Image 1 (cartoon, helix red, strand yellow):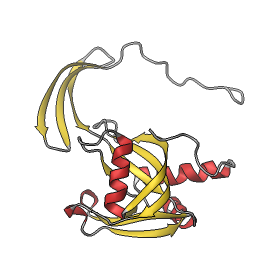
Image 2 (cartoon, rainbow, N blue to C red):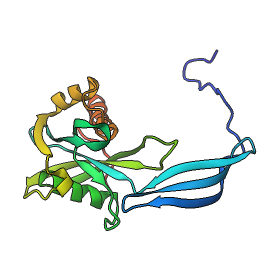
Image 3 (cartoon, rainbow, N blue to C red):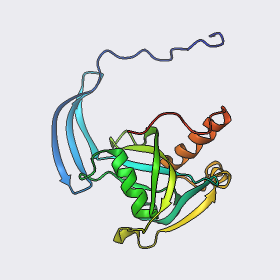
Image 4 (cartoon, helix red, strand yellow):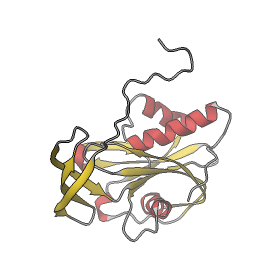
Length: 203
């Protein structure tokens, strides 16, 4: 039994990690590609590993001076239903980076532009079959401009919601989008520790 504050080692790290021996692109489109690799496993055996290589995405927690968040609701095709979530989307090849993508997505979906940007972190999800990373940002100092949603976002609805209400939607499971949940909980934890906003600056 370990004492308080002591870390228990459940499994030692292996000195032989996975190694890619060959990689073939079996499908490619403007948003992602599917690769089929020949990989050497940690146990020394080789096998086929199929995975999706994606450019990543952004999620933006935009909060105004009244402590309200900009929240979107739209039909999510892959889940066959509508969902509440924070503004965001994929990082385009034309974007100079994740922050540029965050600025663009926020403006397209909501019409908002922000003076202050802070990076809250980055999360991964289905690691067994994709390298996808969602970059999370906090946007403050908001001004409203004209929206320019993409054709696929014609059904997108934007609402201002109090932070506490959005937090309730996350903790109840009604907001299931991982990046949105991470952003809201990250801000809630920061406030609980006496810091009104996370202190890491966006880049």
